[in-house]
Length: 63
Image 1 (cartoon, helix red, strand yellow):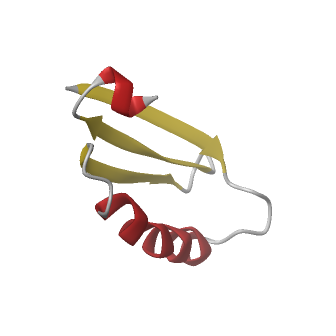
Image 2 (tube, helix red, strand yellow):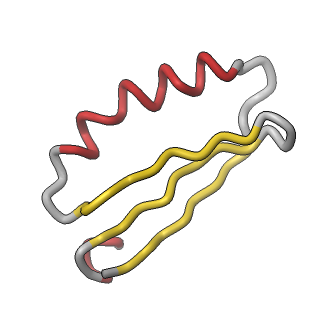
Image 3 (cartoon, one colour):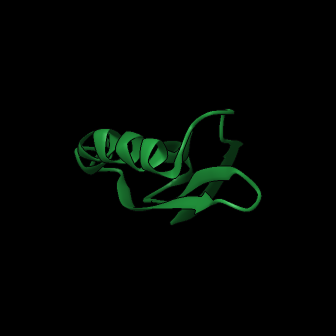
């Protein structure tokens, strides 16, 4: 298994609710990927960073 951590800056003007709405829209796509064991979404209001923690079955799947 491979753990991948991705973070990115939240665009100016984007609210927590906007970020969560984007996460909810993307969740079905991630759930449909058989190579992804688990995904956790990240959000930090103080630093205005968001992202995800992905647990993949293999390095090839993570690419």
